[in-house]
Image (cartoon, rainbow, N blue to C red; front, side):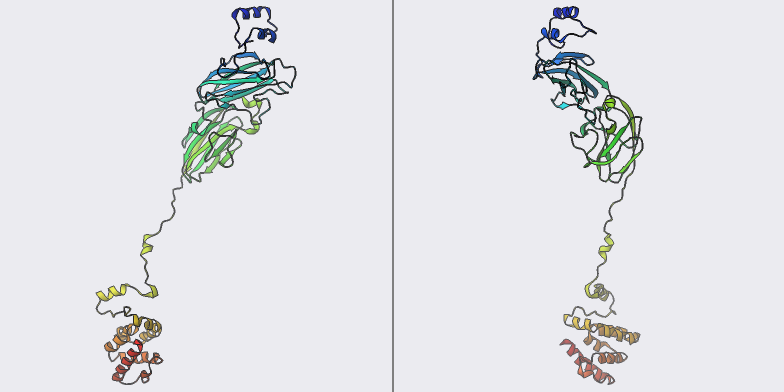
Length: 417
């Protein structure tokens, strides 16, 4: 059995005596001089890339381990053929592990049952992936007792950006940049673009294959999706990367672009095929508008309650001819507010000489009596008529100025009450 230890002499004899057909060897003869010692990862049999290894599973619980050195960024494919199958119900399967002992391997989107395992319809099991870590990778083969199989591992050169399968290894791109990549059915090319909120992105693709493009504002690591982003993260996508794709960044951050084989086209026939493509990304612009701020001038619009302007006090200090407002006397404020409208009407009837005295009447009746001249006596008499309900001593508004003064004093006493 090839892949097991056997003496050179015995192998030479078997080549001469037991060769059959196109150089194949009967399983019984190969197994006779073999020793099954690769039942674990530690004792795995080293194999070379692009060469085929043949062996036999000695029992139903037998596992054969193989070790192969692979380089980061390579695409690798593995194929196991159940060579002596007579009963379609029997099967052979295999798994692939990276140097960190993680099981890896991609399959077509429809995941046919002969991905990594033979099926009743086919005696071939296959799988593939992109090498993300330099070092020794391991393949474990299992199956039915006495099953003969062949194992072949091949590698492909993908593109300069691989491996870019995960967020940590995503290829960073800039606005105006065009990337030229190569995609297979087992490859997932991931690109990262930093965007500001409000920027509009236009993406154009050029490919002869059926490729899909998905855009997300964040992605989990490792990504569980084979061909698409979860709806929780997707912001834009196109099933066929031939026309333009546009979207506006609704938040500042890193956006991920995932180029994959279209899910409907991902079959066994296209799984190993390589498809070149180009992708151009252009950031059309940025929304730099900021929310409106409060106008500091609005805060200077201070009004005194009840319509009183505090600036009157400053005016009294700077202009000796301006009468006092009288707002400092708390006993007069209530009465002055109540009779303000009537008194203002009286001030409209007085001439220019009595205007200042009328203003005094609006604020302080007692001060007004001492300062009014003979021309203001008529205005005072009119004011006395309007306030007749408050003072019984202002019955005769046509009396002399002396009587008016006396009435004013009585009115002042009443106002104080």
